[in-house]
Image (cartoon, rainbow, N blue to C red; front, side, top):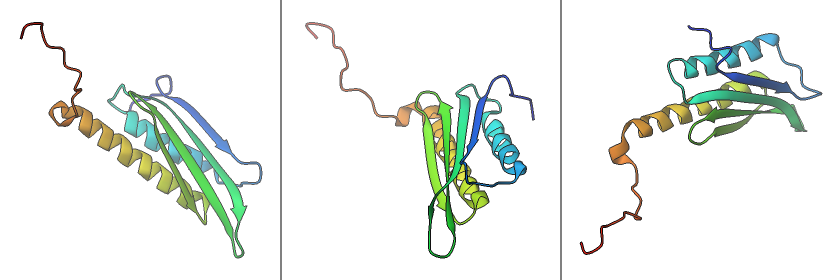
Length: 123
């Protein structure tokens, strides 16, 4: 894997009361850098993990991933009983959305066309 450290802006935030293993940030960054590999559309990403609510039996973690990708950013928010599960689900959702967006952009004939087509006068 080529090093995209300079090409991919990266932010990772963890809520005040949230404890997570250091490996989680490294895994998230690796997956997003792999997603950026060979593409110029993904210019940055931000991840946030927090524990916004407490249920009766255990905590619910929320992971939010934003992929700064051209032409429109992609966001995924997932909740789970562990920080690892929430982050994994959010990353999977972002990866799926980015791949789908790239697939659509590779097929311009399937994109909707504007009805604002200009026609020459008299024609």
